[in-house]
Length: 136
Image (cartoon, rainbow, N blue to C red; front, side, top):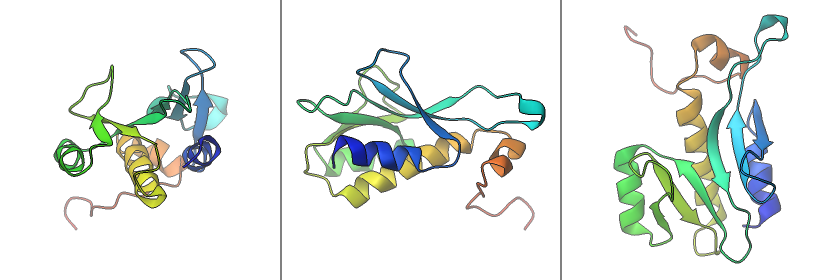
């Protein structure tokens, strides 16, 4: 996986955009839905990467139980630096992990973040819950 591929994956989700709040060397990928009248909701981060080819990694949100399983099975996956290690994985992008696996982890991170948005925002993004609503 290279920098352009990671950027392409992250920006391929509805409402996703790249921001640089920590300077030009750190890409932060966020999701945000617009509301009627042009107002915007606060954006939420789903991926962060230094984009440093010498020490390239990405921080991704993950369900805690899955995060532990992934870390136990893959030395390239650890608790994310400067993040809540219960909910965020640091993933080394040195070629040891398959691109499809990285893409799935990015998508899971996006889904976890979008799941915290209001139903209206989710609908604006065209996102549907995977689980059945209560009572169905």
